[in-house]
Each structure stands twice: as C-alpha cells, then as structure tokens.
Image (cartoon, rainbow, N blue to C red; front, side, top):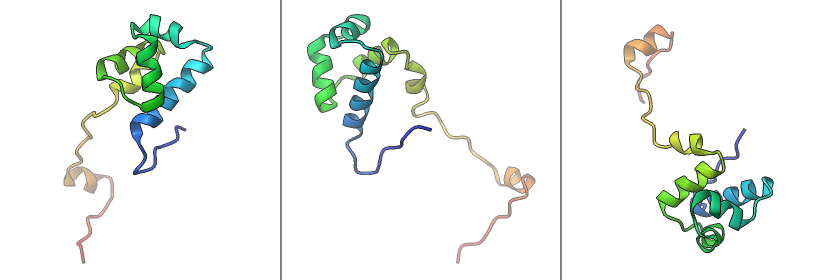
Length: 97
C-alpha cells in the first residue's frame, strides 16, 4: 500500500524524492534517466533537489520509469452516487442535527 503524503507537506518534493528512489532502485544515473526521458541531467538534478519541474518533463520522466499509469489516474472524475443507488445498497440517509 502506498504511503500517503501528510497535509501541509511539500508534495512536489515528496514526488521528487519518490522519483529519485525509483531511479536509484533501477540503478540508473541521472544521465541514464535523462537520456531515456529526453530531460537534461541538470534539470533532473534540480527536480530531485527542489521538486521544481515542468509537467511535460514530469510526464516524460514517468514514462521513462514505467510509471505513466500512476499519472493517468490523477484528477479523474469521482463517481457520483445517487440517493436511489444508496437506497439500493441498504444505506439509510440521515438528517443533520
């Protein structure tokens, strides 16, 4: 199960740390990942240290690391459940007090 990020934490830096951990897990240098993702090693170094990177480059890095599916699940619309569906599930609607 993935570790969730605490509220108030700099999400960009956490994601950068996770990307760096994945890169190291694969045994890749910044140069190797940069070559695979068409991102300069200097840009990758800045991202790993600060969390700053363009969305386009983040997508290319995720692709190179085989993690694009994770990005594609961001910001998907949440399913809307109607009151009828809730009733069918046996859940009861309660009044606020």
